[in-house]
Image (cartoon, rainbow over all chains, first blue to last red; front, side, top):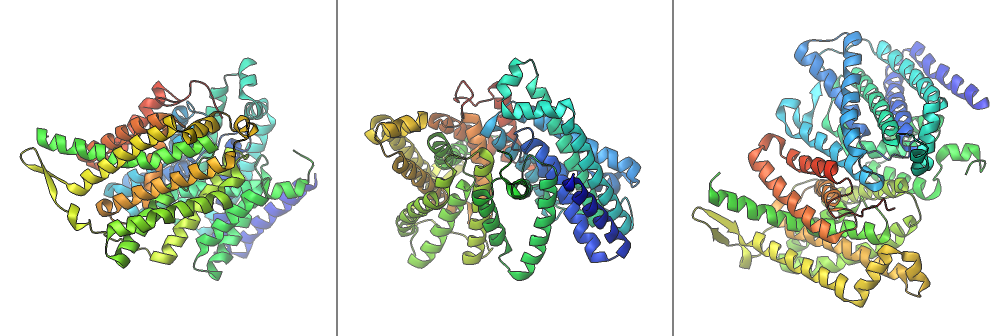
Length: 300
Length: 292
C-alpha cells in the first residue's frame, strides 16, 4: 500500500515538472522515463518469464527508424497514424525474431537474440540508404512542442506500468511466472509454453517500440548505436539494478541510472569505466537489486 | 564468378573460418566446462590484436610480439578467471551475461585509455609477405596461408590434448559432472582456470594472427564475439567438433556473402543460423536434451 502511495507521488512529481516548463529537466526526465518503459517491458521477459533477451534495443531502434522512414519518405506525421504503425512494426519484428529465437532455450536463446540484434545493427549501420553510421533525422516530429512530447512520455510511462501490472495479475501473468519457475511442469499441465513466451516477447517488443517511438519524438533523431547489443545490455543492467521480478524496481532503476549517468559524465571522461564498475558491483553485491533492499529478506 | 575467383573466395572463407574456430573453441570450451557464458571473450581477441600492434611497434617484429604477447594473454586469462569469472560458477545466466558485459565495457575503456581510438595497420613479417599463385589470375597472401596452417595445427593439437591425455580426460569429466570429479579428489578449480586461460590465449592468438589482415580498430572484439556466438549456436554449445564445423560454415558464408550480396554483407551468416535453428534448435552437434 505504502509502495503504491510512493509511486503515485513520484508520478505526480514527474508530471509537475511539465508545469515548470524547464527545457533541461523535461529533456532529461523524458529520457529517464523512456528508460523506465524499456526496463519495465524487459522485466516482463527477464523477471517474469525467465527469458534473458538481448533484442530489446533492436525493437526500440526499429520503431525509431520506422518513424523516420514514415515521416521522411511518406510524409506521415500525425501521431494517430505513426504511433500505431511504428509499434506495429516493432511488434511484428518481435514476432518473427521471437518465433525463431524461442526455438532455442537457455543460453542459446541469449546468443540468438544477440545475433539478430547485431544483424539489424549492421543492416542499418552499413547501408547508406538507411542513414549509415550517422543515423537519420526525423524531418518533422509527430508533436512539435517539447511540452507535448514530455506529456506524452509521462502518460505512456504510467499507462505501461498499469498495463503490465494488469497483465501480471491476470491468469496469463501467473502462467508466465509458472513457466519461469518450472517450464517442464507447466508443459505437462497442458500449457503451450512456447506460445505463452512468444506472446510475452511480442508484448515486450511492442512496448520497446513505443519507447523508441517516444525517443525519436523527443530528440527528432535516430542512430544505429541505439539498436546495438550494448544498449540492450544497459537495459538489462537497469532491470538488475532495480530488481528483477518487480515492476517498480526496474522503473526506479532507470531513474537512478539516468541521474548516475548525468552526474558521472560531468565528473570523469572515462565514464564507461564507472558504469562497468557499477555493473560488476551490482552483479556481485546486489543480485536482487534495489527492490531487494526494500523488501529485505522477505522473499527468496 | 570465374573458377579461379571462386577458388580464391573458398580458401579465404576457409582461412577466415579457421580463425573463427580459434575464438569460438575457447568460448564453447569455457561454457562446456565452466558453465559460464563469457561475453568478454571477444575482448580477448581485441586485446590480442592491440598487443600485436603495440608490441611489434616496440620490438619491430610481429613474431617477437606474438612470443611476448601470448604469455601476457595467459596471464590476463588467469587474472580475469580468479577475480571475476570464479564468482559466477553458481550464478544464473543473467548474472553471467551482466558481469561479463561489465568486463566488455571495462576492456573497451582500457583500450581507449591506453591506445586511443585510431585504426592501426600491422606489417606482416618480411619472410611471409610474398603471395602464392592460385590458378591463372589470382594470388593468395602467404600470411593467410600461414594463419590457416597455424589454426589447423592448433585444432589438431587441441583434439589430441582433449581426447588422448590425462588432463584432457579431466576436462571432459569436468564438463559432464564437475561435482563428481571434485569428489574424486581432482582439483576442478585448477582445471577451470587452465581451461579459461587457454581459451583467453586462443582468442588472443587469433587476434594477433588477424591483426595484419584486418587492421586493428576499436570494436573489433564485438563483431568477432557475435560471429563466435553464431558459430557456437550452429555447432552446438560445448562441442569443439561442432565449433569447427560451424566456424567453417560461417567463414565461407560470410566470405561469399560479401562477394554476392555486398549490401547485406552479414545477412548470409544469419540466414545460415536461422536455417540451423529451424532444423536443429540445439545446434548441429549439440546435446540432444536440454542441458544447463
